Image (cartoon, rainbow, N blue to C red; front, side):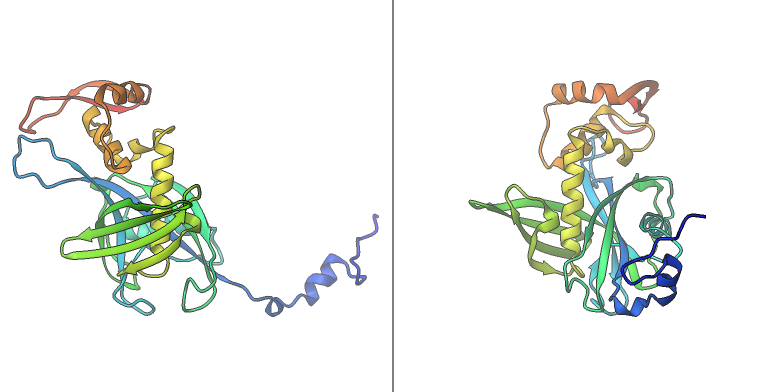
Length: 282
């Protein structure tokens, strides 16, 4: 029988574990926070005009301290019996009623003091969903849940940094944040200069999610997760444009989209304008 290994104190692994005191080492709480994106139609009075698109994000109005009455990302603490991804999936299911959607880990936010209660690290995730599938509901610690229109644009370019302004709006509620990041860096390491109406450091997490989404649109088909099963090429282009916050040449976009989609024999109906061919994911 092989001799069991002993450490510098002469202990076997079993002996070491028997004497191990968890209280000797401070332990953080771990939360899973969700950046849930959807693209919705703008309200259009003229039914013959193709509606524009709006990029939206799901926020929860906090019903308890800290940040009582402020808006926050859906999320919660990770339970001892689950992984962070399982916690994120649970929170997504509890808040939206949907499952089996695109889910991607974003970043672990661990800045000291980010939560006034205690040492809390946030393992954040990004989800992309078709808003038509969602029936939102607020969790136990929230008063209400709502889809906020998200706009995030660079306000000032300096020699080594950029200042970005974020606005989130829903009905008569308007939230705002200003962040500064290194010109060649990302939002995970950005500084929050202003934050009005949002809880914790969630403006930084939202900006990080949008940055990831915009970056991956250039070489993946992620945008298709924001659309229903059947869609027009114009609707797909609108999704790209509202996320990237710029117009795209139609001909060049259709060449780019061609490998991602497959045309069907179906057409749009009862939309007040000429029927358009419907496509689906390839």
